[in-house]
Image (cartoon, one colour):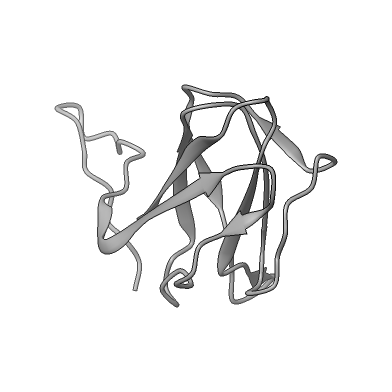
Length: 112
């Protein structure tokens, strides 16, 4: 099912997705890779991420792990990521590893 985007006063679409009920994930970012225990919903195509410290991220399946060679993501940034679709394959999990010396938290929100 497609999502209808909200429109501004000039009837131009506003690129905004709403938060999916039950789609919040909190991942500890430490010295070992961690991933969301519950997979993203089958219809989730976009997730938003926010980290309280610098981390490395990787999306994938139920066995995904993050390493220091994966994508660097800075602290304090709110960012939308595509997790794919049925045509190109879909990722169900995100893995996180701290990039600094201190543990931190990655917040993940599924969007619809």
